[in-house]
Length: 165
Image (cartoon, rainbow, N blue to C red):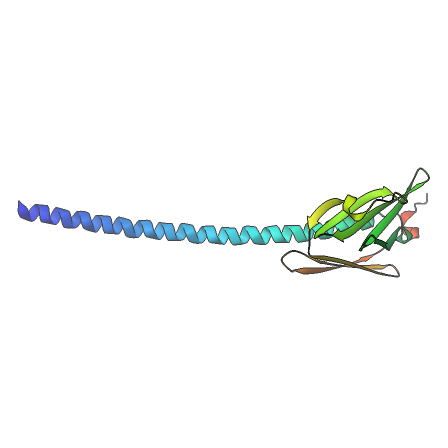
């Protein structure tokens, strides 16, 4: 009887060791997969933020009725991209600017006297720069990860905004 109990205990120990190796393998695969998923999720978030910011700016600028409606102006201590529009005889400005680490927007009457801190936060960024020459607008943006994007847009001409029957 002693021989059988010795063989049974060796078989049980071998089964436990095999189970532990199997469990360690499964755990390492799960942890590796979780790390890969984390990196992919971070990459997708950064990519989404970058493309969203560029699409936002593109859409805002394309809303301008003409190239004359887009200008660069000082706003407090900031430089702002200004899109003007005339609503019922009154001039309104949409200002897009960089303030305290945020891309900001402020829609207001042209002579409202509001300051940069009065705008709405759009998204956190590291820097924002706008250069306008003729009908070409160049926008440089750096996100919080230090990734820089450069956007070039041709401004809408007055003849593009008209429709003739």
